[in-house]
Length: 173
Image 1 (cartoon, rainbow, N blue to C red):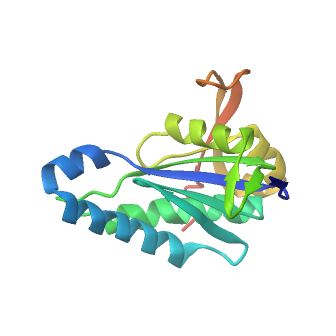
Image 2 (image 1 turned 90 degrees about the vertical axis):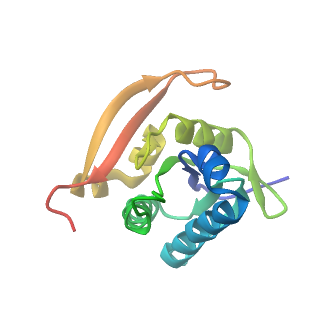
Image 3 (image 1 turned 30 degrees about the vertical axis):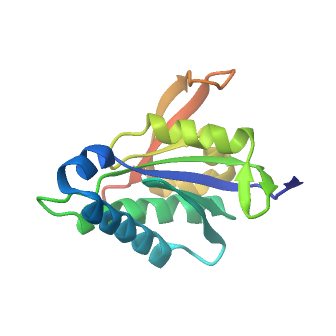
């Protein structure tokens, strides 16, 4: 395994996907996954990539923290617009800034596990980030609404992790 440079590790997860699949069937579920992937691919900046698909979610990599945050907020907006009354596309997103290990094209290790746990803590249409993301992004987050949620205990993570909810500032388009 090779180390990689520091970056934003992001997990997305479609909320209610299992129920959606049970109600609407596999064909509609695959179409929903395709819609998610298309939205993400269209929004990714040059320094980012889809690392892999994980069932109804994606593992993403960004080389720059502010771009990662702004892209994830844009994705949440796009997901909300892509849904309709019968097919809402509620996605939750978790992000951590770290230095994962590489295994081929894949990213693995503690920082990846932490990002996944943060995504598990997110609600529908929500972006949660670790304190490491806030530290890496610095003053650029002043243009956004950052709400401290406090240290959170997560399964398999030895120490509580300070989490933050990030949304657009009310006057930001």
